[in-house]
Amino acid sequence: MEKCMKLLFLSGVLFLMTSMTPLIAQKWGYIDTEFILNKHPDYKLVQQELEAYSTQWKKEAQNLEQEIKEMRSALKAEEVLLTEEMYQERLAMIEDKQKLAVAFNNRTFGINGQYYQKQTELMQPLQSKIYEAIDRVAKRNGLAGLFDKAAGLGLIYTDPRHDYSEFVLEELGIENK
Image (cartoon, rainbow, N blue to C red):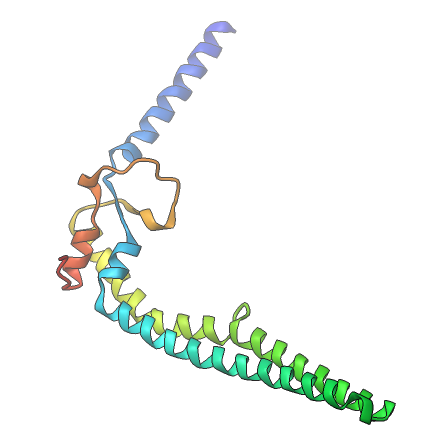
């Protein structure tokens, strides 16, 4: 029985060693997508365009807030002159305007809001270009996989010899200055 257990254990270890060998022998590297993005001229254009949209939307949100503030000030100034019914009507108008402002902010800057959608729309072509360049670099260098240093996938140490970011930049036709 003991001999059978030893044989079973040794065959299990042998199986693990032979099945792990191809995995260990694979060639791996890493890239830094943040570095690549910051070097890509299109990224700066995307950022500028996104900033323009953001500035416009923030201005609209500030205008709504200013209108609410002015409505509150006007209500406060006229409070003594208004009947209870008129006061409640104006208060309801202010509350409606506040709801409108909150809805605008959620629709624009919330999860899956216009800002996020515009960012996705503007970044998609650039991300596709970079992914295609990464794919070509990985195939050309016979890599089994690439980690993204910027994504923080648990890389504690990276040897610069295995950084393929420069190759991706080269593939994209971008000079690293």
